[in-house]
Image (cartoon, rainbow, N blue to C red; front, side, top):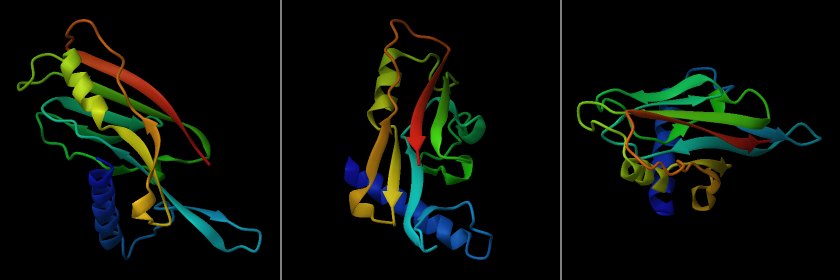
Length: 157
């Protein structure tokens, strides 16, 4: 599973770097600056998921980062750096909703989504050592519901 996430994150970084070639890239990466003023570590934060067949909205610090209605969304990973304005606690909110394909959100659907959803940190584009910061698991539900919302926190520095 880690290999799939690494490949997916690599593809997003490659795609974003090609698309952002001529734009201001100030928010693309978070760099730690050493005392002599030279960037020593470049940090890229990602949210990876494989949400399928249901509607969803993903918010990072109350800003919409991704969504899908009637299966028109693009699965993760999403680069999160542009949604992180300061170090410390960050908030992730997901709203999962039924649609014409899945009439209800079942415990099984939430369990399936939880298997591969998380926040990841990439240091200096070292794809071999991507680090999971937070596994985003939905709490168990006892019966099916039309929609479900969950909030998680993760830390950045």
